[in-house]
Amino acid sequence: MVIFLFAVPASFLFQCLQDLGNWYYRTFRNTAKLHDAEVERIQAIVREGAKSGKPMCTARKPWKTMSIRTAEFKSELFQVPINLRNILELNTDRNTIRVEPMATMGDLTHYLIPKGYA
Image 1 (cartoon, rainbow, N blue to C red):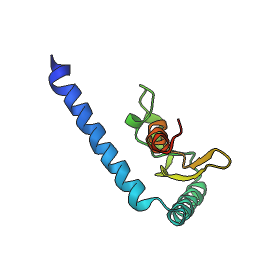
Image 2: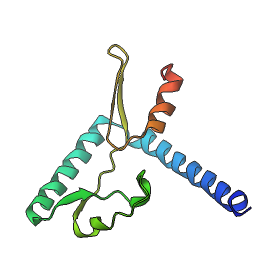
Image 3: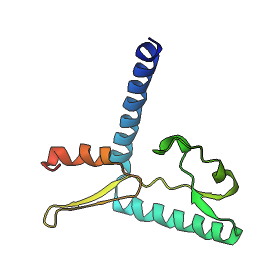
Image 4: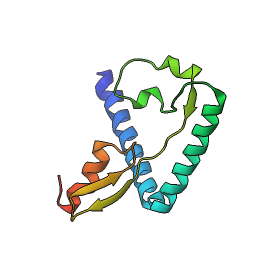
């Protein structure tokens, strides 16, 4: 009963908010120019991390992974925030799509189906 009354609506609301955030991000921040600037920013952070001498990892939150383990090891590492989740280019001639590393299969599906791809 708790799942039906709380978990399902909360999960639905969370997914709606996440979809809204993804729509905003892709609508207003999805350009190659912003991609290049973000990559340069990440490169600078990686250089800083290399100088620190600490091993590096992404700063992705543990709840965003597909694993049930906790990522406690990350607290001791140099964390690099990578928020690259755009779909950059669909090349219909070559049937290829260029995406950033944090784009999900759901993102690709929502993007490709209206264009006639699956």
